[in-house]
Every structure is written in C-alpha cells, then in structure tokens.
Picture 1 (spheres, rainbow, N blue to C red):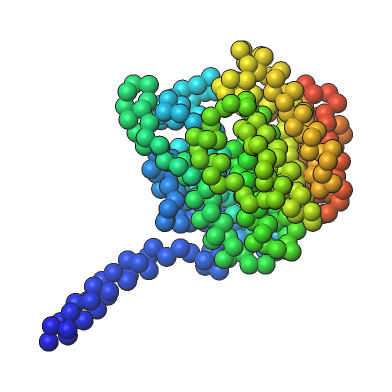
Picture 2: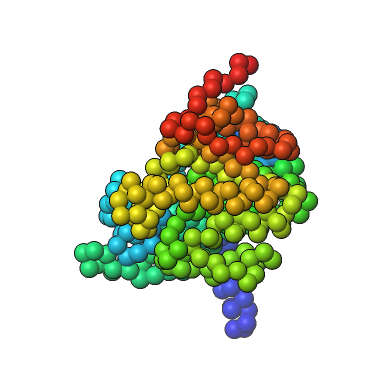
Length: 377
C-alpha cells in the first residue's frame, strides 16, 4: 500500500512540476518569427558579471547565411575598476553590466540594416552574443573583490560559459548554413577570434569569414587582465599555439595566426581606426604610457607591428586600417560611407564574403576617414 501511495505522490508532483519546466524550455529556431529579433534566456551556468540574468538575441532571415556577432562593451580586471560605481577617464564605468531585454532594438544599422540593398549580409540570419562579463568573452573564473570604499562583492568573469551556451544553441538550430560571417565589435572582436576554433571545428566544410572590428590586442606585456579572467585556462587547442610563450601582449596576434593556419579555407581579418580612442584609452589604463598622448603613440606603433606581422605571413588574412579615432564600424551607418585609400569598408567586406582576394588597406590620410557616398540603387 505504501508503494502505491508513494507512486501517487510522485505522479502528483510530476504533474505539478512539468508545466513549470515546460515554460522554461529554450525556444528553437523554428518557433521564432522570421524578420524579427527574439530574446532567448539560456539559463544553466550563464550569468552577467554582477549576477544579472544573461540572454541572447536571434534574427531568423530568409537566406541561408549566418552572422554570429559577439557584442562589445568594455572590460575590467580588478576590485576597483570592476565595481559598479567605478568612473574612469573613458566616461562612466569600464564595462556593460547587464543584458537589457529590449536592446535588440539598437541592432538596426550597418550589417544589421537588413533592408539595405547594399548590405552584403542582408538576407543572413543573425545570432548576437551579448556581453556583460567584462572579460572580452574569454573569462572562466569568479573573484571576491573589495572596492575602493572597502565593500566586498563577487564578480563572475563568465564569458566562456555564456558564449558556449549561445554557440551550443546556434549549433543545434543552424545545422547547415551556407556561409558564416563570424564577427564582433570592440570586446566582441576578441570574442570572435577566441571562439573561432569552436565555430570552425563544428561547421566542418562551411566557409567562415571572420572579422575582428576594433580589437587589435595592443596591451602591455605584464598586464594582469588575461590571468585575472582565467583566459589562459581556456586557450583553444590549436597546434600553432603549442609551446609558445603566450603573454597578454602577443596573445591576440598569435591566436589569429594559429587559427588562420589551422583553417586555410576560411578567411580572417581585422578592422581598426588609426587612432582608435577607445582602444588607446584602455591601453593607457593598462600602463601603456605616462600620459594619454604617449599611450596613443605607443598604441599606434604596437598596432602596426601586430597587424603587419599577420598580413605578411598569412595568405588567408587581411587588415583594414582607416583614418581617425572612431571606435568600431560594423554596427554603424558609416559602414556604408567610410573608406580608406579609396576602398569603401562595405565593399571590402562584401568582397571577402564573395571569396575574392582582398587587399590589405592602410589609410593614406590617417587623420580622418574618407567619405564615399553609397551607390545609388
């Protein structure tokens, strides 16, 4: 009799719990509206740095191409500058703290202007991997910190778990994309190359075009950020990285080199402004110069060295360097109007996606971008 009662109790509990579990199921691609942004909450191990709920955004489209976009939003690496109320010379805090429910409304320009006839990925579906962990999507550790006022708080550098959760959903739902545009801006530029091996190894045989938008990786050799984030514990398993003495200063460059060598049928690239004010600002905070002006000069020298070392040795890699100090391009209207040395950004990206051999582009007048009006329809 007790077995019967126990079975009835279990059945009753399951009846009560199953609807709740059903409500928490993660939506699949075929349940999402085409031509609209949808927000998905993956749950599991995902979290923002200060404990907020993590989510990502999907835009199903009519074509068979796929954009995987890593969002930017700053970075921090200490108890002081990760504190929610930290203010820096960059203005406000150093990183984006949450994933806002309605922030997909901002994905309307540049490559996200899906109605623009000039958009080379206008019919691609898009998965946006948001960013709220201050670790350029590469962290895997939680620290207990003390802020400048003596208050203690917990911070989760959880970029790897968040990114993998979104990529796992992407792999399950976009099973046979014809081509992938793997990219990201600012902090997302680093995420796009750090997670490239996971994407490329999964989509074996699919051509991938990767573009890091405004994340050249110029940092000081002894900067503590990567170690603080736990990034070195999550290094992709790439043959060309084995035995290398990886430091913060060479990490991004060697990651590009190793990934491009491992996947010769895909293409890799970087975009940056000549004097990117945000990259220079972070470089100064990392100790890149005694003054912002000195840091700016050191950053330009470092950027040229890193980019040249890649484009001189890899046939499936190219750079686009444009004049001025703006930060990022792909999600901005200027994607269609800015040019460097006579080459429009939009055209350069379109040629990469079309499989053409694109040139390395270096600004002639590096004080400001060239402006080119879009072609008339």
